[in-house]
Image (cartoon, rainbow, N blue to C red; front, side, top):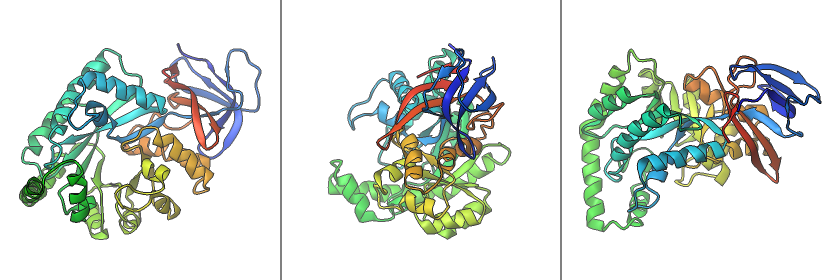
Length: 379
């Protein structure tokens, strides 16, 4: 059921927070913003709760975790997709770019099946109007994979693809530069020393054989496609320089402050992980997102692997005075929306789509009391 509007809400606008009312038109868009209290019985009384734009998640791996909740347990894919969708809405995410791996670097073979299932599931669930959030695809292209060109072309044809990122999870590269730390993590998964070393060697051989040619293939394939492209896990300014020369305009999860600074200096956008901020640092030893925000080198936050981290991180930024609340909310709404090319959402301004959240802030946490997409309640 669509709603006429809201009253007595703390409206999180692009530049300020004001007490007021918001009215919607019949097409599910924001029509009017009014400051001050209202007694109109036609509007939902928010009783002083926050009203803010629906969150836009530019990168989440959460679907993979629903498909494979345990190493040896695989869940039916469509059921997993619906569970993932429900978690996104519960977290206030109304637009989500599902980050799916195109290829496997040698340690997570099930990811290709997850990709293929998700391409089919998303089409059918959208056609049946079974999803509450609006889902897009963010294709994470694993460069050291022999059949990456074939997998990528199949995925692009299946749509709706909104973004691509180039990544290389070869042991010894990017976020896995520290091989001893990588080995320690894989041993914890039960791999024997012999099997672990064999897989590392095979992965590194594929890196040398395929990464450069696959990168060139992707950049050429996308030359005439208006899709945003991101690099992934940038470590050095030199990597940033190369990406900028190749026309890549987004640095996703830069591993070091130096890389993030250089990306911003070159006019690139940066995406950082909200879980890193909520937890107080990186689980893998990378730069703390709080430090990146202090330096002014974060354009947008992504939930990465934990959907509810997105809203919590935004309010935490404001609480810690690392950003104003409108600035922090922009990092999880309008900024990722623009990076994805979604110009019709992410801001509480007239003409924008009425993807909205009503939330109550207490004891450092936000309790969502309603979620609307295009003016229709979905959570």
